[in-house]
Length: 268
Ligand code: FES
Image 1 (cartoon, rainbow, N blue to C red):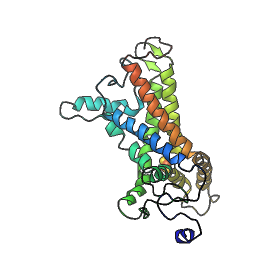
Image 2 (cartoon, protein in one colour):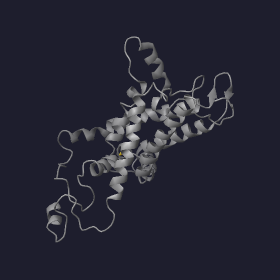
Image 3 (spheres, rainbow, N blue to C red):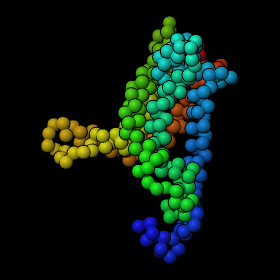
Image 4 (cartoon, rainbow, N blue to C red):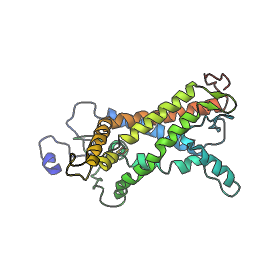
């Protein structure tokens, strides 16, 4: 098929050659800049527990950056810190980072924007480096389903963290702008996970008959939901990434005393 297309008059042959007259390069360029910025910040954040933005939890509250959820990992780390030190975020991100890195949508995005393989539809490849995902190293992408199982564990953990932020010890329950951001973050990461292609296959795949039993009918109903979410997977992917970076920065600004979070306790 590729050869057939390449033999058509005017079809791309060399790197970046194309007959396309639209601004096909805008999307890969935006993806390159956005991914570099957002994933770059998250990498810095994982390692940053010192310096002017070093605090990632507001003292005396349950107001914690979602990058460091669940909070009990911090406690375990504190107990062990005499023997070794590893950021709790680093442990947490062993699940969600490979989940995102192997995501079907992100693969398409970074194959185009970072590896130019190809840079766009009907645009010349960097040298036909893409040989499928059946050999090392790209065969590792097939582990996405297993990272999805781990990512599912983080959905309730993030909701618990967001709901805990509504309670301040000694003050009671209330709400603030930061808590609202944490709830939004939990919602978007849940939607990103629930719209995953692998989850859709896990729920509705491998069946020959949807209507044959109660179980398969239930699976069909769930599959319909996931299919609806899946149609907006790119939206959930970007919105959840943007918001987790924004919330991490916001909480660091509050925790390090640069801004005050408007809330019903009026203390932080
Ligand atoms: S396909 Fe994107 S998270 Fe699974």
